Length: 123
Image (cartoon, rainbow, N blue to C red; front, top):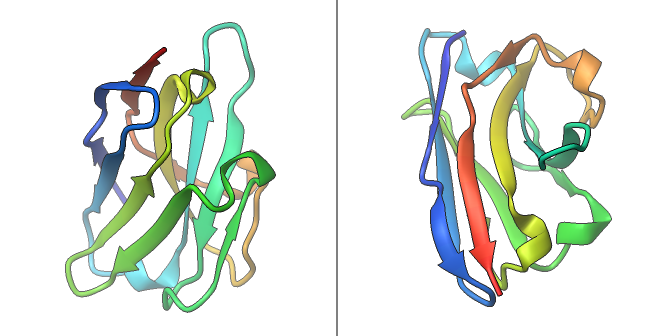
């Protein structure tokens, strides 16, 4: 699976952005899809995950109520709608695919990664 993330940019605090990740291949629905982020000088951290069918999701506590993850298996895409953005959300955001059944938040469970898209939130 090859992943291509897009949609990042510069936004003011309180604003919104919608990230998208396009996947190649015909086995997209066999993967749990996640979003991670990495700020300068920090480790990559879990943000959100969606199940294979899109029916179940899970979020890191610091984005609950602000971010929404969704997927479209017909289009091989996964999205991350980010609202009420804060300066501390500034990071490179990565989409990733895991060949598992559960909603995993561990980086090591994900076999495929996109190239990342920069999100910068100004105060």
